[in-house]
Image (tube, rainbow, N blue to C red):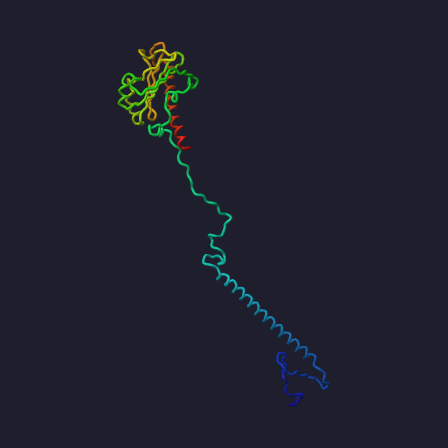
Length: 291
């Protein structure tokens, strides 16, 4: 092979080993063609730049693929409940907003005092003239009544008059407790008849509405009253107790509808007696609740 002008030239490729570089003399003095060398160098730089750009694009795609795969992998590692599998079950994860729960409780209903005064089985508190009518006087509003004599008997009929003895006996009365109170020239006797249960007391109250009178009780400075004169009588009941009043003037005058002081005294003594009976129930209900 000859190397001279007009002969074949091999192409030099910087990426091919053992390739030959040809010099174009451009003349007979054998100096390099600097323009050709510059052109060849520029071509190499462009190729190298394109190679690096392409490699960078491939690397970017690879990184993007890797990130996408990591996201998919992380999503595939979640549990069916939507949370990471390495966390404890939701029931065991403490919550700062959780509120404590307490077993529901309810206080028992209060005991009814009326239940204790409705029958002798539950009404077992001590009973006497002193427990029903304590002290030496009582005050109702601005009126003071002084206590006179008291009486307590199991012969209920002996403490009554009119139709009341028969009614008390038939109704099963077991005890009659009486007390007399005075205010000025007025005297009132209160009689409390005791029965085994509320039904008996209620029946006696209804039957004793007319012509049934508890006997007035003199004594302790109080003379006889309401033996012949017209007097005010009342009848009522609370629980297993029926209670009666007989009131009038100590001087023997008849009571008329205009005698408001007598009527007031009858009302006051009825109210006081009811209060005393109800307090028995309250005391026993309280004792049972605290016992």
